[in-house]
Length: 412
Length: 160
Image 1 (cartoon, rainbow over the protein chains, first blue to last red):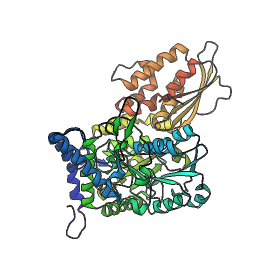
Image 2: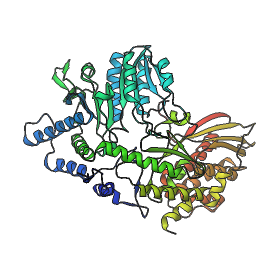
Image 3: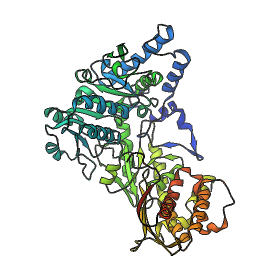
Image 4: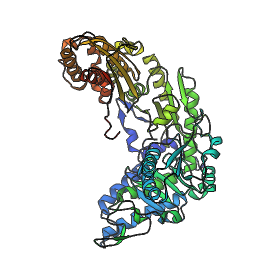
């Protein structure tokens, strides 16, 4: 839909799809470099959500009337779209959740609660977002399991040479991120999953930062669970996905109890549906799921290979220009990286810098990015992060460089 | 100059930038009666405040170390200059006046705030109020106890 005859995408024209990019902030055109926190939404998604509420709104699966059937059909169609997007074997492997955090908590509490024993080990990495760390801390404390961590090298990549001593038969779960939300590191997921399976560990991949930015297929990655959020891939907030390979997902007991997840209920006891509905107690985020379906159509219309190349080109250009700024240090890999750039500046603390940038309409994130242990690992309390997506341009990076130069002058 | 830049320049007045670069009363206080560790977990700012009381419980000596944004460091520096030698009642009064200065739209800030009036620009940046208040939270805690160590946070954990 956005592909020109040469199969090149007209990235500037595509900005028109995002009404919010016309906003002015403090008298300046908005430069939105915070998509790693949450992406903006195209009209195609906003229209579908509005259309749902205007023409289809009803509860799913339990009504025999026309609206309920429409809502159910579109809700389940979105599930199939998600399955197709990630290469799941069937739509039954797709559980709708509130987001990545809830997906990981579901696995930690329901799967972990059933299958982990005292003395077992859970392997994580030093670069995990708090969602893929705190969830496991809570489980480990409850059942007496141990946490282990793959260290991060100075260049922001995983210290894979340490893996063989960490990934032993005590490890029952290896949970790690595909792309680091603060360093932009891209981890070798397929290789890590293969090594985990060799010792009998189950794998969970946090795909929050990768799903909307690059091609991703669960068969090729070989993971058992995959978690992601809709709102970082052009969909509304409050909708997310847990993919679970059928053989494993079917063994996971219910997590939340309530309507919609049961087969029959007596006052004493209940029996439960098969996945995915076993894990979707209560009225789900129907509009969100339908919006996610529309977001997938939008992203696939551009192509995730093209989006990834666009992100990478922007990051490369930004890194080249930032390298020339005095007193600025980028934390993270120099190559094979996503469009997420974390940096520190001698002249200004991240919060002073982001306050300054905001006054020029430039939205960046300043702080620990839900990565406190990783920040400590690099000897900083926080960084400033610029993250790019399909609607960002080189001109915006030029303006960011101007603003950073101004900040250096202002705070020096 | 546009209005937005005016806000920025009011927030980061030269006095504030100067105090953040060269904080006064920065350092250890060997014979402190109270040490308070102040923490802003949302941004990682830290203030370690050390206080010595006079015979009447007033602030005889006050020093700090720590790291953080320009606002928290300048606020600590300006605060220690202002509070040194003040009685307990004067510190409490100053606390309330400073809190009003950085949170309310009231333009009649008391003259006695003196140099602290340069912090007025913070009120146009609600997310930075915690930065300005961090050292004041620490001194508030220091007054609550006459000896020992304590920790205060801009976000109180409910389950440690």
